[in-house]
Each structure stands twice: as C-alpha cells, then as structure tokens.
Length: 551
Image (tube, rainbow, N blue to C red; front, side, top):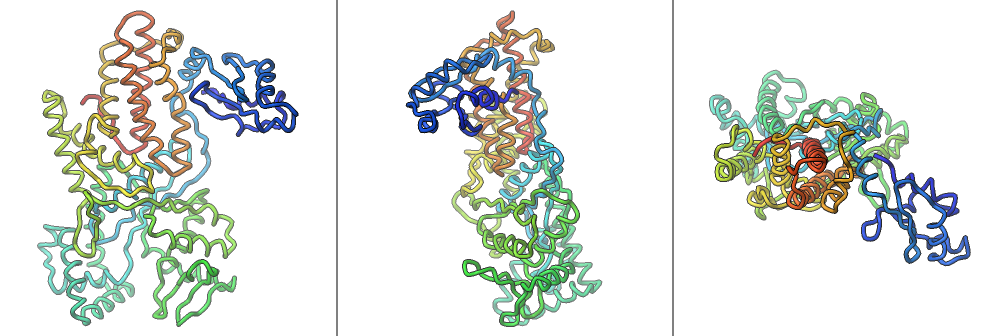
C-alpha cells in the first residue's frame, strides 16, 4: 500500500519550510490528509490561510487533489487510484519487525490450581500479541512461567497425606487437588502444626526427596494436562514452560551481580536492594534464606536475555502487580543493564462474572473450561435454531462459543475491568466474535456461488468508488497498519475493533450494492468481497479465533 503521508511530506516539504512528517495528519471530515499551516505563520510572516492557499497552488501530486481551507492544506486521494493501490498490496506482506526478537511471558498458571476465568485476560492478550508480533516478522518466544515454587506445595503434600486418596486423584484430577488445597488452608488456620508440616515438606521438595518430588511432579502433570487442553481450544502454543523452580538455583548469580555493584544490603536480616524514596526496597532473600519473587524474576530476565537476546521482553500480568515490575525493572536499571528499558509490564484489568470477583484460596472458583463449555453449548443452541441443516454443527459451535469468550475479552482496552456476560458475548448482531465470524461466512457463501479467479487486470476499480464500497476499501487497505499499532501498543483491541468496523462497513455495502449483478460491477464487487473475507480470516487468526466457512 502506498504510504500517502510520506508522499505528501516529500511533495510539500520544499514549499513549507520546516515541515515534519508528523505534521501530515489523517483526516475524515473534508479530506483524507491535511497539513495545519499555523506553525508556519511566524516563519513565513503570512496568515495560515494565505500559506495554505499558496501551497495549494504549488503542491502537485498525481492521483490526489490539493485544496486550502481555513488555514489547512487538504489532500484528497482520487478514489480509483486509492482502490487500485489497495488491491495491489498483499495482505500481511509488511514485515517491519523482521529480525527482532520478542519474549512474551503470559498465562503462567500455578501448579495444582485450576485454570480459572481469572487467567483469561493474561492468556488471550499474550496469545494474541504472540501471533501479531510473529505476523509482523518478529521471532516470538511465548513463555509460560509456571508458578511451581513455594510453601503451598508442601501444604498440598501434607493435605494429600492426611485426606487424599490415589484413586480419587486419578479420577478427579485438579478438582481433587483444589479441594485438598482449600481444606488445608482452612484447617491450617486452626492448627499451627499443619503449617509447620507444610514447611517440612517444602524443604523436602527443595532437597530433592524422591517421595516429595515424585508426588509434586504428579500434581504438576495433572495441572499441565488440564491447562494444555484449554490452550488447544484457544489456539495457543508455548515455546517454554520453564517455571519459578528452574530459576531458584540461579538467584545466587544475581546476588553476585548485586554485590559487585554494592547494591545488596541487609535489613532486619533480609537481603534487599534500596530503590529510592518513592519505592519500597526489593527483597531478594528473606531472613530465613528463602528467595522471593523479584529475585527469581531477575534470574529469569538474565536467562532470557542470554538465551534469546530479546529486543523486548513483555510480562502480561494484571495491573495489581505494577509495583513488583517497577521494582524488577528498577533493579536491572541500577545494575546498569542497557536492556532494562526493553522490559515492559503489559497490565490489564480484573475479571468478574456477572459482578462476582474470584478467589482461588477460598474455593470460589469458576473454571475457564466450564465457561468455554457453557459458551459452546449456547452457541450450539443458537446454530440449531438459525441453521438446523448446517454440516459440522459441533465444530462450528466450538469455534463460535470459544471465539465469543476470547473476542469479548479482547474487544475493550486491556486496562478496563471486565464483567463477563455469556449472553452479550454470543450476540450474533452486536460487536462480538460471532458477528465477525458470521460476516466472514457470509462473504464465503457469496464467493462460493461464483468464479472469482479474475486477475487484477480484469478488475474495473472505478466500480468500487461509491461511498459504501469505498468505506470498505479504506478499512481493509491499511489493516497491516492496525496490526502494527496493536502489537507495538500491546493492545489487541485495536485489531478486534477494526474487524467489527470492517464487518459493519461490508454489511452496509452488501445491502446497498447488489454483488451478483453481472458485468464489470460484479467482478469488482466479488474481488472486494474476497478481500474482506481474507482480511477477516487473517485478523481473526491474530486474535486466536477460527473463521468458519459456514454458519
């Protein structure tokens, strides 16, 4: 696609002394792009209106009209030229991040805890960012930093020995572990001996006791089996499952670096790094010698930089962990690491279901798989009602139901708190995943009725210059730019919302311009329909959704 801003800048800079590329702004009301001329008034000693009028006479650009209005230099692209340029560009061909490496730490489930609705945002935001960065040419490393370290696992072993049963564990899996976890928490509040017992079992895990490690590995396998089943439904794969336990023995190396910089201090028996008056100190080791999260995250940061040589390392973690990441990044800065500025906390708001927030510790848990199952069941009933003869209804219901949950999570800005509603997410007529998927299926249905093998030379682009068609062309033309903005701003909703806009514009075009009309108009309109279908499929894949051919 032609970079019109750059074209305008190159053509106008000799006329407007001091013009910068940022002065060329996209516009909607009167033109496609404009240059406000107010900043040049002092330099040229003329009014902005006179400057714009003079420039309009002197700046000439093929395929574009130039006019002055109220101190603005306005540029309007000739529609046929724009449409031709839009179709000349290949979807997804731009690879501006080729050669860059981006590590994305997301999802990061805890061992022996369920994959609940609270994990939804980190999982789908991180998964979408992985796909977007990869589509832009980056080498993307998806990391599931497992929560597999801490005294709670000693408590779980203690609970299993007191109240667990091997047969129930095999049959019920994570449900059994959750019940044991909650029961141990409740019982240990009444019996201090249980807490001491948990610490002993934790030490045995750390020391490599075969029974303790074997039991913990079994808990870990059960957790990952359930988690990977959910990831498959969400179209997510990880490149690394290295968790906290992997970095425990690497904390000593971090401490050496801190001592070499005279950053490590003793405070009430703990080893800390002072971070200034505006931030609490980062605790590296407690007085009992145990390392803390920030120490293990420092070790992980060094490992990732050494292993992957990342250009960016993203942490997709809820906003309430902001202080932790400020401390982590500040310590790296104090250590003098030039890549400390390449670490980014991609925060997001909290999730509730119909107004009810979640707490694993108290057993008030809604499994994400249960939410997905409910969405698929609801989608199945809607499909049965709307299209009872549809082939492959079960597969389509899975794509639509799961997609509805994911799209709902990715439609609003990530910092906004989410209150999930199944009814809203599965609205086929709203700004939802099913709406986008259905529009894609409608496009494919139209294309299936005709031969659309015409080459670009066969298309009369003047047939796509009416308002309804042109609105669609403009939205699909710079879709790659929307993907770039979504990735670099760490905001997948930019793509989700663009997809909805494309669908809305296409449905207006579909209702206003008869596609199956014969002749040059039909050829052009089918070409546009195919471009929309391809863009929707591509965009849906970037936000983890399938694009069913029929619905």
